[in-house]
Image (cartoon, rainbow, N blue to C red; front, top):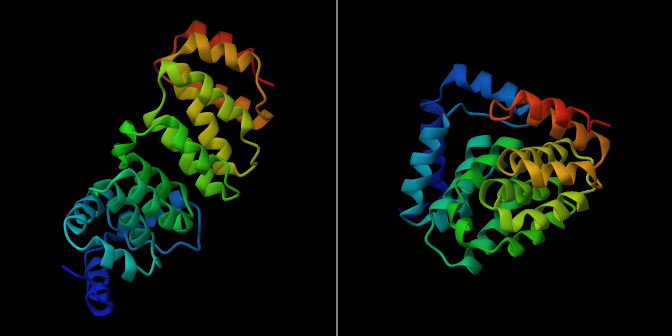
Amino acid sequence: MTYTKETYQKFINDLYKNKDEKYQKFHSKLLKNEDITVIGIRTPVLKKLAKEISKNDYQSFIKQNTHQTYEECVLHGLILGYTQVDKEELFNLIDNFIPYIDNWATNDLTVSNLKSFKNISIDNIHKYLNSNNPWEIRFGLTLLLTYYIKEENLDKIFNICNSITSKHYYVQMANSWLISICYIKYPKETYKYLKKNKLDKFTQNKTISKICDSYRITKKQKEEIKKLRI
């Protein structure tokens, strides 16, 4: 199906007809951004729609996409994970999408669906981390925590974490989330890093808090890691 202005509007009208009002209220509160319009379509439904769109003329869907609602932005992001394109084209599609990320959910859902990054070198992530756009930085950090936490990547990841200077809340949260998962998977190496790093106070302490929230960490480990709070 090729999307025109008319057929795209019909698609959006159908979304509104099938909205879940309870979910709409719940998810709007989670996003913590009153400027975002949420229709109220659950994630499994959005993934199914994105998969169907990606099999057809997804370029026309993206072209007609008005990005006026949370769901439209998420659909755009999810489509990227279902398209069968080469690495260069994927990066072009991502570059065109990133300006529409304005909340953690759109970012994190998109990243979780970009499974082709399992076969892409970690060195390709730096372009996002060097951005002035905090949502693009979070995009890079969530790619790292989703696809790149391996022993051979730890030094690179820790150097990246040290280089993050943004004070944006969702960047700092992503950075602490990344390090906490590194600790859960590689406690010795990450503990050594946490003892000596260039993290700001918020990120260091939030990382420790996230680690202590994990059920995969022993009581002894939690007592030890708490001593590193600033």
